Image (tube, rainbow, N blue to C red; front, top):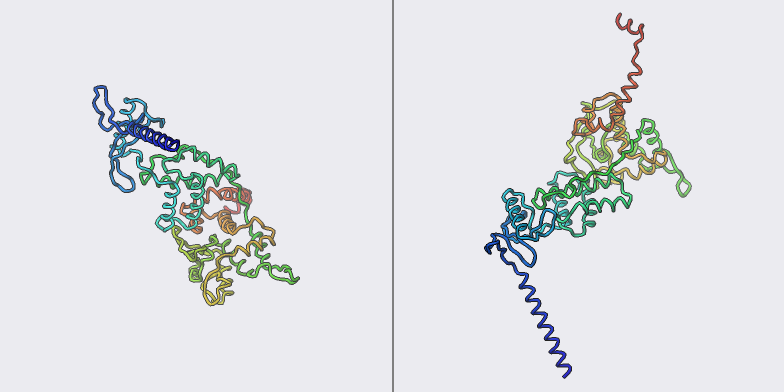
Length: 430
């Protein structure tokens, strides 16, 4: 009996709960909003205590128009509480729809999904970005995807950006790197704006962190000689025998000197073939680069010509004599076997040689810096230097970065200017 009574009691409770749920659901059905004359207001609905606008909107991704009920909020993001407020917000949305300024009302993609789609696009070659740039953007966007933790595009607010910046600063990440992180986010969200998924950037009004760029030390001709000489020195191995500091000392020295005399980037120098060297017209053509993915065109960098200077011409002539036409590449791979393939890197040799030369801060890019510095201090105009090194800005960047060298050079030249009376008289007589 007790058992049966318990079953009936549970059944009664269950039925009561069902009744409450039914009444609750009935109370939350959509109803038309009435005006003061008890007439329905077109396009305005209420459910519970929330007001909704019924609008026909176009999905920005599919282009399909659908009728949707949109919860009404005021300019501060709070739900409207009165009929007059609801009417005002309904009219505002209708005006925005007419002006094609209606915010996205459909659910937007999650940031991680949209970022992945963006990377697929730019990684396919359609985005006109270098593979190295795509890899850097991928690293940045992965950080944002992890931090935003499933947020949709329209849910990203300035507070999320600021919290991300704070988290990076706590990890002692440099201001410059954090600024690049924010730029990476902004690039993707600008694309989302062009796709009609969001209306505004959460980074609006955000100022970049202040950065201080250390002045790069000049890699001098004496440093260049010391580095190349160190490559040919010997060291004692574990068995007590003398072995070279690096097994490919000559190739390493040739590689470093070529970059220092031509301004070629490290991957561009690896991609040089003897067909790119025009001894008849005294010109070096830079057309391709060697990366981890293999041999690539310069893509969004145009092929360029570097006119021979005396150092470059002498160096290439000596290299050609040593090559014995054994390879079409200026820097063939030492492990090429029967295949004629270029070297991929001299990184291991670099680490060994710079330690021996006590030039621990030296990097391959210092060779390019050396070339540009020597050009500036020789009084060559910035536009010509820009053409040699592949800058498309006509020398603006060179003026910003290396302008101080030009000023120092001009001051040094001014010190040599003489106004001796005898010298002026002799010049006039001649």
